[in-house]
Image (cartoon, rainbow, N blue to C red; front, side, top):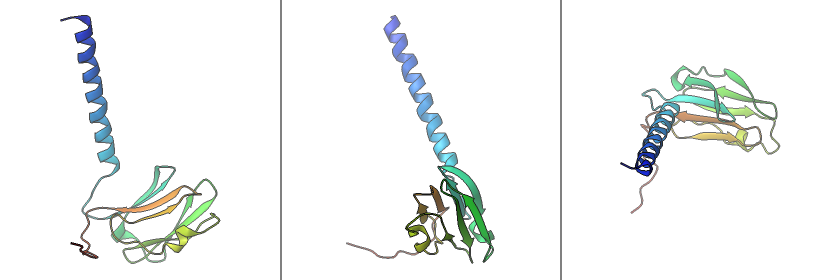
Length: 128
């Protein structure tokens, strides 16, 4: 076995290790649970993770973003953004989200509110 063969084997092992560990980290970051979870992130860092069923109607969470505070409010198994320092307030206009896969994004303040979990939602349409 030549030196080049050994370098190729080591390179393949390093690449496989990096690929496996990045998949493990992605899976840990995007856990799918039986109970839907509300994830609130700022700049990609999770600041709050709350089971959707444990949100108290009217309870507000102040989240510090890059421009200031965004206010997220819980409802009966749903969540919305009620206040944000961004100029257009598109995130506030999104309204309530309640199903896994739904997301509210405040791009200027870099705040993301998303729901993860197993989706038990009904189809909203079928095309052929």
